[in-house]
Image (cartoon, rainbow, N blue to C red):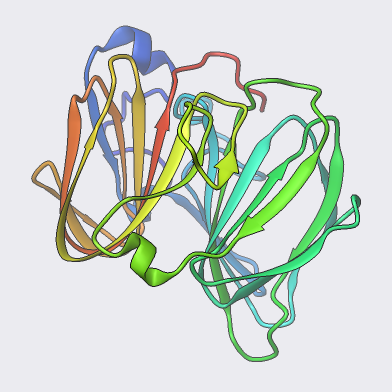
Length: 256
């Protein structure tokens, strides 16, 4: 089953039709598939899953929750005009691309690729015995036709323990990863903690709970659950778990 708790929540049309949105997508409402080497759940339309009502949330186009078996992965494949962030939850991610970049990102680290005019890359689990769990996210670029680029950043647990860690931004913040889109991405590891995040007018929020259980403005969210917001002045979180938060602008032009 794939969809949203509110069945009338068209991913982008909702923005112009309703001033305020607080829509929960439960883990079992996502599209999920088991390919043997890959177990994946899509928050938005992706690959064989297509729902015209669920293409994006503002500039956020893809959020895939993937578990890759040992010694397996995605072979070389192309991308263009998309900003791609991969957050490693456990295990290690090996990257190779047509620009000559190679690297391994460990748990808590982030891999970033701005596909621009076009790039090919592979993503794999280099371990012989440990599964790789990651969340891959695609954001519509603020500028098209740019030169492709790649980067990776390691973070410590302390940097996100009961506080927001700003990972990527194109909103003027000083972030380790620079985006061309007017968006930002944060993570936090709550340990019986409390966090707040204020939204500016006209902004959309997308919160994903990677593990644990948290309350978002009083609503319980468990591992795999997500929250889409519009017109929300602030987001209040409490509980214990790993949370990922996007602050994005609304957008209408969405490539399929």
